[in-house]
Image 1: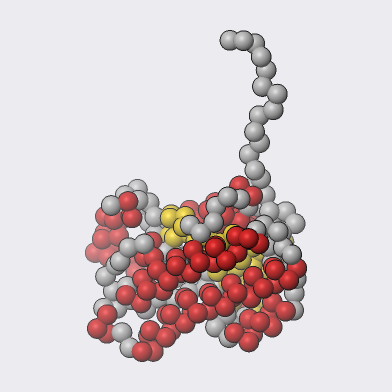
Image 2 (image 1 turned 120 degrees about the vertical axis):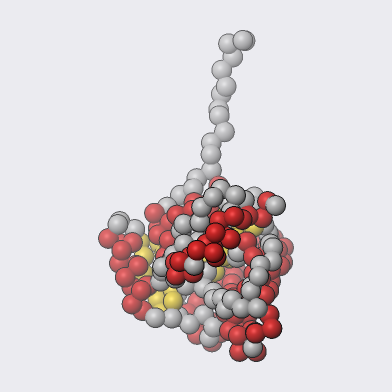
Length: 261
């Protein structure tokens, strides 16, 4: 060894989000609430959005009680006029988590036009116009380093039985995301997706009481367990933070190995 010292080691970019404003849609429970909590724990001031007040108010209060900064705002993301008014009434956000979504699992031959509209309108149309409104505000205020994070699914990378509508919507999100990234790169704004496997939440738990369904899912998740909301919390902080500053137009697949086959 020469005995020469290294003058300066590289420093890991910060995962902290202090001073940044974050918006999470569909934030009343499950994945949305967990992501709001994660961003707040990293220092962001988080606005929790949903159609009804009770759950998001309780979630915001719990975040504040734990030492974070959070507020609740009632918004129907499917109402484009309400979305525009919402963003016009407050400062631009640095981080958007496009999480609101729905699913109507059934074989393709059972799908009605109403089913199609319900899933595609919320999962794609609403996500698009929420992102558009968030971006317009970022551009108008010169937000540097903005981050859009769209909650996709492993079903945006593969197919699944009884998932024609959901797959259509989540594959669409992956395509929108890549195009968003290209439009926004010159402005220093990034766009990425998080694509989870099946996550056990109060809403999904009844499905897993069907032993055959549960076993079919576990057979595909190579790490041998269902996902938890905690499995997604690090991913959202990473994509919101400077630690992912060169990552845009891609998908962070949190699927326990499902899509590795």
